[in-house]
Image (cartoon, rainbow, N blue to C red; front, side, top):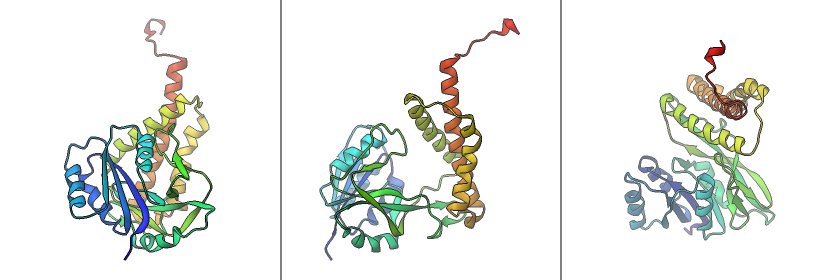
Length: 269
């Protein structure tokens, strides 16, 4: 069976634990671009082992450029007519693999497809097919989109044309971190987001500080359907609310420290 004219592109660093299953889910792809930014575990050996077995892998070792910059570099290395952005800890589910041949037959005015993602929850497993995260643009025609390099986190492809939603199928996200580790990740990402907003001159909002975490939780828990996943779903939604709160709180404090630097004026009290 001929391969699909799709280049998958993946950025990685120390992903030995997760990357193998990601590569194996791309068996129908004509090209797999891997851009490593200094792995010190067995990631590079793992990648080379797949290449030695005949997988269509092209490996690049590139100094870290930031999330958007690194993904843009990876996208530029793709040679096929369509390009799929996938992370090391993601896999294509059966429905998405079955749908891909139809997606790439889209009319010329469709330049990309948004795809849903389903997380793996500790104590539950992968969420059901109808319990998904927001769909994001992951599949793009070559030369019809690029990354916004001003985005420090939650980077996405900016398309040059019409983008539609894939009707079925998901990316499966397998990184089951215990809450101790997940909160550290949310802390890191919220710092990147708050720094980006502060640098762009965005002002903090008391209303957002108060209500954004709740809106974030309600969207994940009810709209996305995490309520169907019991306690693991509740924990997942609450973790998202923590990220939202940390982002707003950090933006507030960065602005406050700029406008009123800390000063120990104990003698006045």
